[in-house]
Length: 172
Image (cartoon, rainbow, N blue to C red; front, side, top):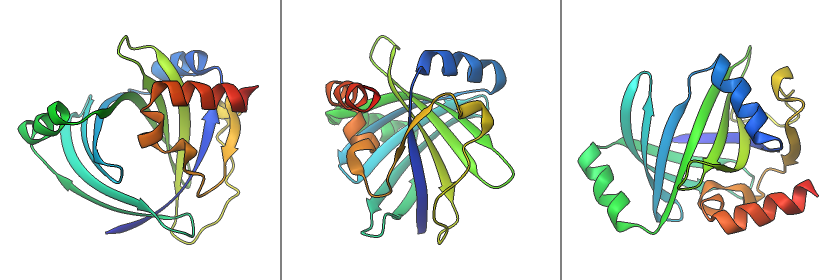
């Protein structure tokens, strides 16, 4: 079991950023489906190969999250994918700076078009913001998400209409 301590940033000009990251980092393609709001199955494909996992993740009142993850087979993942309604696809770029791991996610519709983008940094368990945004993200990190603000969790962002409306609202 792990205590996850993360902060997120809603990103603007996602297409421009994605092009820059694609040239610099190899992406992971992620398909994710939700059995329950806090239980997801995930398939990840990258240059390192394919992986499949089942993850329980619950936000705690202090803003941190408990995350428990186990590997699964592709066949097990496919059973969940075929039987769930809440699904998402995203392209992820991961970046490790001197202190932190950053994941930059581009949420995709069924045609592969980005409808929202979020950067997330994982910090040590007891660390509190602020964290300095990497220089290459400065022009794109538009909205720092307050810890505990669940409007930006992937379960909710899987709803494309919801995500588009939320990003229009914060970017206005």
